[in-house]
Image 1 (tube, rainbow, N blue to C red):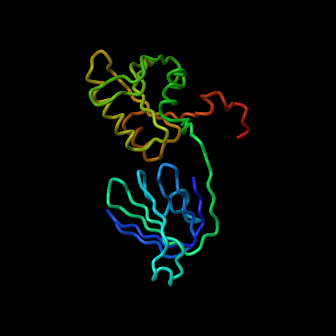
Image 2: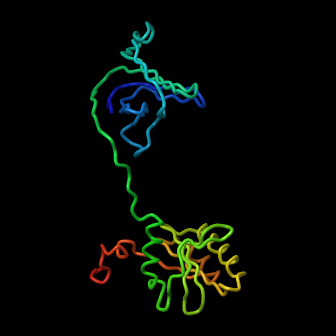
Image 3: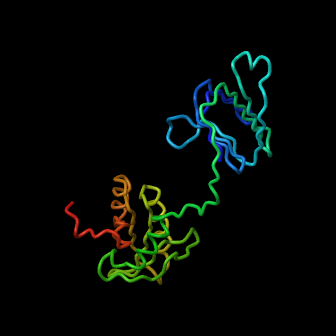
Length: 230
């Protein structure tokens, strides 16, 4: 990866046209051909970029560009379209290259599949008398995350990391379908998530769906909730 801090202007042309006026920015040139332009704000998102596959050509400025103080011209062209990123560099403040090697990739923790697995193993978190029937119970409109047997009948569980109204609507559709099956009915619903938005909780409770908040760290055994002061 090449990292260049430079005073530059940037023009993107192709499917859209965009221009960045002269300012000091970070230019990132990746081994896969991607070029990204960052400012010192705006969090992680670049101001502009060219995605791979792309090719970059560095040339001397023409007469008019040189008179304007341009030292280098970077032209980045996409291989599969006419999109072009042109960077006019007036001054380079830093230029370094680094070999990062292969990356093992991002390992996500706390995704919905993790919550599903843990809740299936700890089905008692739904309350006493609950037993697991199966995970990913198939229906014509999609799989129900967890199907369990409760003291009052079958329980369908919809799991989300952050529970919102869409999740409640999804569980409602499952319940309408499952309750048509005489082998399963009556089927009640549980909306389980690490966080449940107030609007989602209100809608769920209005429809007779129980809400359960899950403590993922505790479920993994990494946090003892009973030993906390707060």
